[in-house]
Length: 477
Ligand code: TYR
Image (tube, rainbow, N blue to C red; front, side, top):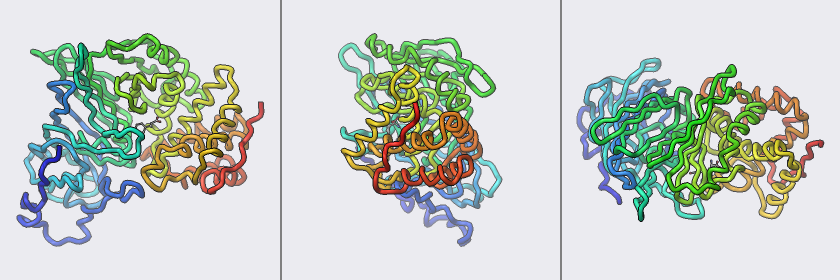
């Protein structure tokens, strides 16, 4: 359902009280110009934290109410803040607790806010947005089955209660959250979710509280390490929550909280895909270094969809509940959520390593990793392949991203040997989860050269840049 376009002009923003002409001070219209999603984000804007309160009154419908306070800084003077938003009707906007003018441009999917004075570099402001209604519909045409990205509703059916969750990669988060919706602007999150009594809410981060009031429960989650907006997970269902003992694989051996959420009708075999989660966390932390977050688990959802590595709490559809996919999503907590693609063409770095972790898991179980790699190579030979930086949305999650991406890491391993490969991966995570927490393809190549030498860089570069598929790398057995 489309709502009428509410233009900036209609709201008087462009005519009333114009900002004095300050060309250098008005980069507000500049998006981040991502090569694949050029419309996303705002140059200079840095969202540090989202404090989000969602209220779901009738789970299974698309209705939602949100109040979010963004903690903002900027690297340039900003006369306006332009957030990505294709969400429900905006009811109020406040800047440091004072009402300020705003405009919604649904066509551009932007919420534009004019602060009382330009946001200066280094200054911090709090921007609050209240909204309620139906999240926007953002169709992802690149999935085999048409998929609405962002806010998901699973209607009540038969004896089954309704449910909601989000599935946002790459750009669905702004259907339910006004945000700087690009992976280069990572942020921490406090997420509160209010649901009818009897429902359970879950979200990325560590649960810090639950308050029951008349007819409702409110759950609070703290995601203390920055994550990309697409990786925020939110779930509402009559979940069975299963708590396990913490696993000491965090930074400095710290305990990682373990909890999983299963819908009541989850068949037994589905649960089987998750019984070795602790073992996978231990194995992958040996290869990649300490697990980067405070918790890990899965939330199982019922629609047929791809699995998604939502931070600390992977989204696992029933149909994707296999051990292999479970390990893939765990690996994404390092590659994707802690080390995040700087732009969308860099997504192969996440998917390639997540796929590579399936090979590491196979070897861990005593299987033949080289045969696993040979299957990837045969698939690519049969289907055709491309250089790794995606040039359009349809390439983001294709065979080359996953399998040629994975073989690129296999080629590096073949070149430098297991011990050096392990050291490389650990150093790579340490280096690129720090600071902005992002990695670009050129920065990755430079790091390969720095850590593994010019020969290794040349090998990797062929996998990244050449059109033709290089020969199958062989890791000695
Ligand atoms: N990143 C997912 C994976 O682990 C794939 C995916 C992509 C899932 C986009 C959902 C989505 O919306 O492979």
